[in-house]
Image (cartoon, rainbow, N blue to C red; front, top):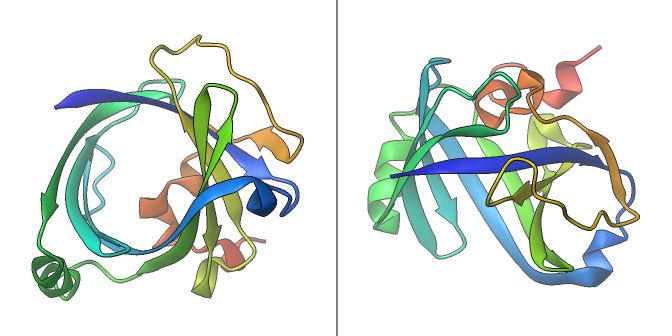
Length: 157
């Protein structure tokens, strides 16, 4: 169990791809999307995880997170029980200074959306911002994966 401290940004170009140190396909869905807690099932490449996240603080930067690795066949079975709306994306990891940005390029109903997240050790931690980093959307619930399953990016006006 731990607190997760992260900030989320829009991405303004695909320049991050040339800097990526890894690229992994992710499929995920939610067993529960209650605003007080979400329960996510994720297949991340050849690994799978069950994750519980608590409600974010007022700024949207910090929340409780519990995650356990599970067998891929278990995740595949759990995905069949999830709420409607699967997320499909490629995650690129990009080293920038002393930090790793996780850049997610979405597919399907969220095609066209690219966001970058950075995990921090404290909320006010300084970090280097790459040229392709756009507007900050930390705390904007529209960009939470659990909400993208209900109101996908392509349905936004």
